[in-house]
Length: 595
Ligand SMILES: *[C@@H]1O[C@H](CO)[C@@H](O)[C@H](O)[C@H]1NC(C)=O
Ligand SMILES: *[C@@H]1O[C@H](CO)[C@@H](O)[C@H](O)[C@H]1NC(C)=O
Ligand SMILES: *[C@@H]1O[C@H](CO)[C@@H](O)[C@H](O)[C@H]1NC(C)=O
Ligand SMILES: *[C@@H]1O[C@H](CO)[C@@H](O)[C@H](O)[C@H]1NC(C)=O
Ligand SMILES: *[C@@H]1O[C@H](CO)[C@@H](O)[C@H](O)[C@H]1NC(C)=O
Ligand SMILES: *[C@@H]1O[C@H](CO)[C@@H](O)[C@H](O)[C@H]1NC(C)=O
Image (cartoon, rainbow, N blue to C red; front, top):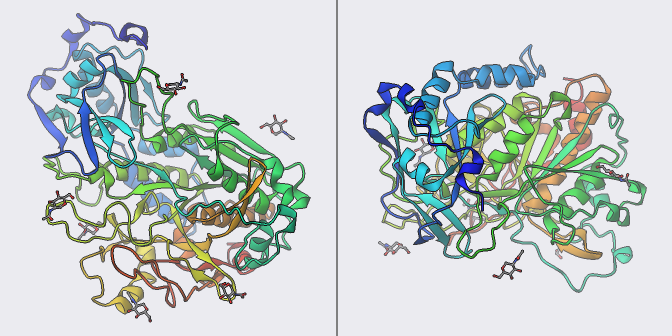
């Protein structure tokens, strides 16, 4: 256990004298719950020597300007199309004002907190510092408790309320960990071990039920394409969390013999594990399919711990901080030439879970159009930074059909409610749903789709989504948000993937299979563009919903039941189970190759 003195906390008696008088006025609640969020139970106080890894999201300078530029460089009709921003340009845009740094530092010092152990994100818009629990509670007028999740047993240290001096409210978007009761899970609920599978070498090429890289190459028409930009800087990144890290890239040749020598660079983010003794089906699936489809394009696997190393004293709960933040801060700090042009991630959580309680919200989470006070919108804004630097960020849309979490509202009425999965609902991300079978390919029952309650329908969905809503009519009125950002954007096969795990072939399904598949096709498109002197595709959505539409095979069959309903139907045009459809590489290459 780390003692407070070792991490730089000093009783800074005399520095406090410099504190700004403005900070001496009463604290005002920043966010509070009336009750413990649904699904969690208070199991007692954290240990007295518990250290909170505080992260303070400072008000960004020009986030709106960044988003404005991102739209221009991602609009194929705009003269700036493809002019991705550099790390420095992004950081200069969003850097907080000096007055923000000054007031925050005054505040910390006035609480006897030394800044020697504090660190900043590259744009200095996040301030991190480890703080003993007693000091944190005083700083935030908070009362931390250990909460356990009823169904998973997961433990987190959170508070039901926190406050900041009123003068700080305009300078701080949020402080974490405080009232965000987040959960994140791998998208692999349909993952299954099929003991009856034939030995690997006997696997028939019946892609209708058994999917291998060769099946996907044939189905999405990449078979004839030979990557040419592997030595010109093209890369694909896979993000892994929750200690899924065992990689068996060497076993890929079983399904794609020409990939002998394929290699995956494993990057440990912030102490992420690559323990070869841990089970890692998700990691194996991701990497075997990205490598299987993009070889010889360099593949990078980013292993971010979902839980910090557990202190084995039975009283200290594993620390579960927001792992996206750690991962995002890591990749955003990479020099431009090291950032992969495509990322795939097969993790997500219920969009609503951080709001899973009755909120007193004295300082409203939702403010006008520039909503960046909510943790979800702040994290989404970090994906926008990555997009602005020319990366396509691709996530699984989820495996719950129309259902995530409980199907009920938590306002006391227990009304039925559909729910999508975050981060797929973040507009700067491309969300991938799942299909199965061939000729015809159909939307599969678990493919998650729906409508965000945090993000408005973006302008690039203005043509695609309303026809679907019109067909739906009043069916499900009130169960989903008519005006929300719609997911998924696209889809790809997600059932019966053959994956080698610990020497055995497993049959794996889920949108966790669809995301690496779609990301690989985007990586091949980037390869083609880079080989022809073009920039990477970057943020895909405005492109896919405009000139990209005809590069997809529209999926017309399937529905995604849940919450006691049959869910949404796959229909002509965009739908809330398969999005725009599945990719046709040859057509996309023609449409997007030279813009
Ligand atoms: C795919 O499998 C399904 C279910 O077994 C079957 O109904 C369908 O005819 C098959 N399709 C093809 C093209 O073989
Ligand atoms: C794979 O890459 C790693 C670096 O990430 C390197 O240490 C290793 O030797 C490579 N293996 C092969 C077989 O090329
Ligand atoms: C931690 O404790 C549990 C039981 O309390 C034990 O099973 C486990 O092996 C311990 N782990 C380590 C790393 O000591
Ligand atoms: C709503 O659900 C909660 C939790 O299951 C339960 O305690 C409560 O009684 C329910 N309320 C109504 C009106 O059914
Ligand atoms: C629909 O989503 C928007 C944000 O996109 C939000 O302002 C609105 O409250 C949501 N409506 C419902 C009924 O959830
Ligand atoms: C989906 O299609 C079925 C069969 O055509 C139809 O009965 C059902 O009403 C449709 N559901 C929705 C939500 O559109």
